[in-house]
Amino acid sequence: MKIALASPTFPTSIRDGLNQVDHLSRDAAQQGAVIVCFPESFIPGYPLTDHKPEKATHQQLLDALNKVCEIAAANAIAIIIPMDCYEEDRFLNTAHVISPTGEVLGYQTKNQLDPSEDNFWVPGTQRSLFEVNGLKFGITICHEGFRYPESVRWAAREGAQVVFHPHLTGSDATGKQITDWGDSHSPYYEKAMMMRALENTIYFASVGYAMKFQESTSSIIAPDGVCVAHQPYGHAGVVVADIDTEKATGLLAKRFKPELYK
Image (cartoon, rainbow, N blue to C red; front, side, top):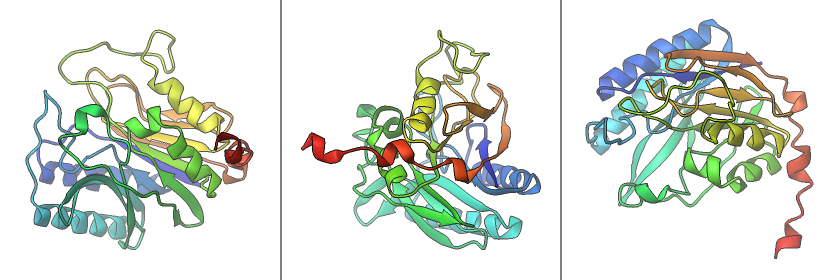
């Protein structure tokens, strides 16, 4: 089956973000993908010093989620849409999963916040496994997928064939321009993507924004650690790849012996 990663530009507004979701989801569906994932906190946009997304109300976020459900149903494609979320008195960084018929299947919270995020979001407390069209997958969000491999191992041990990894690295203001995937002089992020796949024997699908100075790019890594597809640096668009779910055995993850670490 085919999976897709959407690398949009940073949204200027919720409306702009939804327009990009519509365009890129349609592109992914036309290429035969069964599911498409967007970057971290895409609605309304990750808070950065060089990008200040609008502060969204609870109702605005609900309306945006409903619109993404309509987009999924119109294109018959499942969508993972990372977005801010109000849950009672908690403000969370989440990734909602929407079925190809437009049904919200649930969401994954970001549980391991970066220290810089402690005053913005509240950490989540649960992990979830999802299934769409026979594809079993988990989600780990940015910092926790890069620096807390336990989040990926949990999903692999529960039967995930793919772990999607919405993230943000880089800036539109300053930084270094990367040209070669996994270059030894580049930041460690793409090496971490490779390891999350290899150490668990699953696919790892990491997706970020298209930015002027990216520190990593949207990439689909096979269970043997090989990058099978990635988006060109700095270019908005969709990367689609065929995956062989029979190769995603989770062998190494399932051989883990937690009793040795009590």
